[in-house]
Length: 399
Ligand code: HEM
Image (tube, rainbow, N blue to C red; front, side):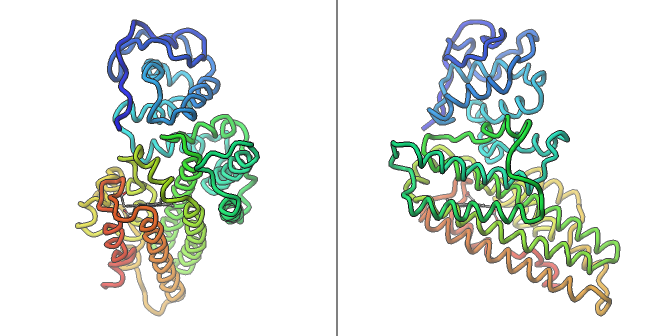
């Protein structure tokens, strides 16, 4: 099914005034990106407006947002900057289907999460934000469980218990480094709800989106660890590099818990909403591919195939010749010197954890997807089978 297309409408931007109502007034223009109207007043209450839009979105699913509302939001884009980075990021995500640029990045509202991480006032770190997001799953599930009406797609009590147990475990693991509480405050509290924009109306899509967001944040931590380890190798400190890689291996435990959380979803539920997620896939995850490239430059075949086609920025970083851990080790290794044995062991451990991660992902995908193609337009499980052959540190093994 296609996203709704806005129909004809009158002139001017209905949001030019001060009202934050999201009543579906007649559409002002036909088509995408209406000609920029003259600059109007600043958006008066961006948080309130976003909440009103979300009220509609949660009732319909992003795929089915009413065309007049989409056109009115389109009309606000030229003033989004006046409302600050959060509102601009919100519009960027909410209008992705309308613009025909629906992708993993906007499905998961990553621009909004990045705004939280970039905002010095939030003091947010990827670990803490991941803890907040998964705590929000616990809150969401518990609130839904106390509602008298139980829609068909809600988990039964046993499944809910399993989901909550794994979600709480994930929060614990993220908080282990003493990163601070999982209670959102300030701008994070204001915009947290806006970071879940389901395409459909099924209960389980909420936690699915949160799990994938936590995946991005987890791999953000892994990228940082490997890059710091690379700099330590270059500085002649392989022992320090090993310590950073051991931290990275620990973080993989967290990534594995995400699969256990997602495994509590029924395949039938997944198939119901994935009809509307076509075009968005974790194959477009910048941080996952950045992690891989930080360990060692992918070979030419992988770099020019599906795996990197969806991450053009990361591909460009690799082609620009960025440093990576494998290269740093090959260029500086001094066998027998202190620290190298522990670094070799840490590299082997990280490789093994990544292999286990891929195998667990492949198992989950096979159960949920069967023989269906991937939403990233690969053949699905056969693509993941081939990925099992890849190694993070293949050039080191070959040397
Ligand atoms: C319902 C559960 C899931 C299914 C059916 C599934 C399926 C797939 C498929 C078929 C691909 C290949 C690309 C494509 O065509 O889309 C893929 C890639 C990927 N998935 Fe999943 N996935 C699931 C859950 C997850 C979760 C929970 C995560 C992370 C926590 C994840 C992370 C990834 C990553 C990083 C890739 C890129 C792999 C690469 O290119 O090497 N997936 N997934």
